[in-house]
Amino acid sequence: MVWSADWIALRPDAMSVWRDPDVRRRLNWYMRVMLKEVPAKFMMVRKFPVDLDGSEDPWSLETSELWRIHERSAADFRRMWRRVKEGSEEYRDLSVSKAKSLLAVKTVLAHRLASPCILCERRCRVERRKGRIGACRLDYGVYVHSAFLHYGEEAPLVPSGTIFYGGCNFTCVFCQNHDISQDSPREGLKVDPVKLADIQDALARRGARNINHVGGDPTPNLHIIMESLLYVESHIPQLWNSNFYMSSEAMELLVDVIDIWLPDFKYGNDKCAFRLSAVKNYVEVVTRNLKMAAENGDMIIRHLVLPNHLECCTRPVLEIITRELPVDKILVNVMGQYTPMHRVARNPRLWPEIARSLTVSEIREARSYASRLGIRWEPVS
Image (cartoon, rainbow, N blue to C red; front, side):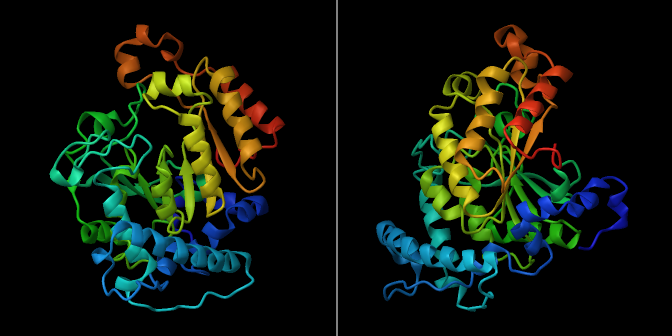
């Protein structure tokens, strides 16, 4: 693995973490893609053939027909990818036309999911293509607010080529990125797929170890992100940094192009999720998506410990992880940096239990409980 001296001094743990054989085992696919031992999944999907049932252009097909084609081809791709991942098969470059690839089908479907929009489980069905604003506070455009090498992410990810998109399908009262997620999501640089691909390639040339799609939340931007992968030239892992409230349809498209997942698992019950982020059916949706993602790539889960929420959220979240996910194959960042921000900072009396920073005893208790459950958190927390 190649390391650049100019940032090792900033994050020496970004080098030392890879000396841990357990980290290399849990993040093996991501590591191999970084080392260019295997292609990033989007590059494989871009060259994976589909039978368009006689059509020359997936855009000309009905959505129902595209889903049938996708279901058939994605199943074949996932079987092939798992063999490559397990080392039982060498990857063979199929070199088909991008226009007749599985990625092309995914691109068309992503655009159709975006208007009327069902990209997330709010399923607001807003006609964003007509300029109307969805629950994510976005029209059909995609707005990049910043793109840079991030040195503050988990050690295995640094330096991370982070792209902050405007808009979010949550309304978190303590959001630290509320300026781009809630306040002014459409004031960033509006990008088309080619421009977004150029941004990714520029980050790769500067030394990014991954392309980190974040926000806000990347989910409302999936249609342009997916299409951009038709044009990205750099061999680089794709990372999905999200609240994981994607619709099941969006997940079906995503799982074949993402190499490493960085989900937020915020709440252990639906009552807290609705009160603090205004979303319904939170635990079921996020758990469903986590299970699907864990089968299709490496994963570092983030859980931000909230003050006074150890019993209602932290303990249940950690228990769900151990009960529903392959805990021996993932890492969990038990995060202790909560600080009151946004609406909580302005109106602390409305949310008194989270109107203070986390105490040392609270984060110690959270991490101790994670250890008792057999969760590996130390390399990334």
